[in-house]
Amino acid sequence: MNIFRSKAVTTTPEKVPVENKGPVTHTPILSPPGEYTPVTPPPLDETQVKKLGDLRAYFIKNMLPESDSYYPNEKGFLTDATLKRYLRARKWDFEAAKNMLDNTVKWRRGYKPDLLDPDYIRPEAETGKMYFNGFDKCGRPVWIMRPRLENSKDAERQIKHVVYSLERGIRLMPDMVENIAIVVDFKDSSASHNPSVATCKKFLDILGNHYPERLGIAFVVKSPWFFFATFKLISPFMDPITKQKIKFVYDREGKTDTKGTTNEWVHLKDYISSNQLETDFGGEYHFSYEVEPYWNALLDKTGRPYKVIEY
Image 1 (tube, rainbow, N blue to C red):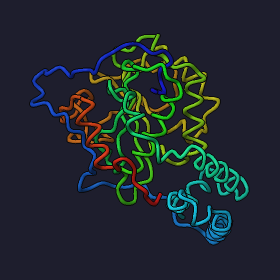
Image 2 (cartoon, one colour):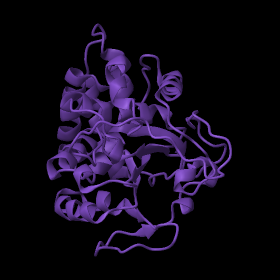
Image 3 (cartoon, rainbow, N blue to C red):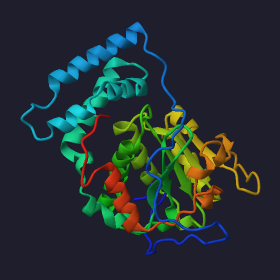
Image 4 (tube, one colour):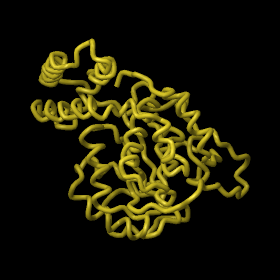
C-alpha cells in the first residue's frame, strides 16, 4: 500500500534514466553513515521519572507469561524507550499514555506486526512503490514512497505492507535514533494516484496510535495541486506537531507555488547528504530499484524472516 494512493494500476518497476549520473547500482543503503547527529529528547524531570516508573510497573505486572511464545517479542517492545515515546505522545498524561500503550500491546498480540511473513508481503514490493534507501543527517532511515507505482488491489496486504515497512525501518535505526524520514515522490503522478481522505486517515491512525514518535520528518517532492486539496482535508485530523514535520520540497529550478500551505518549504540536501540521496532527488547515489537485490538486502539487515529486538 502507498499511503498517498487510492487506486491500483498495473505497472512495472521503474528504471532510472541514465542522464550522465554515473554507474547504476541496485544495492540500497541500509547501513547508517559514520557520522550523524541524532535528535535526542530532553532529560526527564522528577515528575516524569516517577510516571515512567509507574508505567513500567504496570506493564511488568500485565505482561504475557514467560511461557507464551510471544513473550520475548513483547518484552523487547516494552522497553523504557517505548514507554517514554508513549508518554511524550500523550504529553506526559499518565492515564492517556497507559491507555494508548495498552491498546497497542493488545493490537500487537493479535496482529503480531513484527512476525509478518516476508513472502506474503513481497508482491507489494515488486514495483518499488515503497522502500528504504539512505539515512538523513540525523541518522534516520529514509523511507521512499512513489504513489505512481501502486500495483495492488489487496487492501489487507497493502496495510500489512505499511506495518511491515515500519517494523523493518525500526530495525534499520542506528544507536540513539528513534524515528524515520519519509520522502514522498509525486513525480509523474496524476489525480488518479491521489489518496482518499480515508486512506490517509488509516495510515495516520496506524502511525499515530501504534507507532507514536516514530515519524521524524516527511518530505513531499513535486507536490501536485490535487495533493494540496487532500492535505487540506486531512490536516484537521493531524496532531499539530505531526503536521509541522511535513515539509514541501523546492523544485531544483526554484520554489514552486505554495498553494497556500503554511508548511515549510525546504531543500532536501539540507537534510540528507548527497551521498545518501538518490540522483532522482539531486543527490549522488545513482540507485535503480530492483526487487530481488533490495528484498535480499533488507532481509539480511533486518531479519530473515524475523528479528526480535529491543524497541
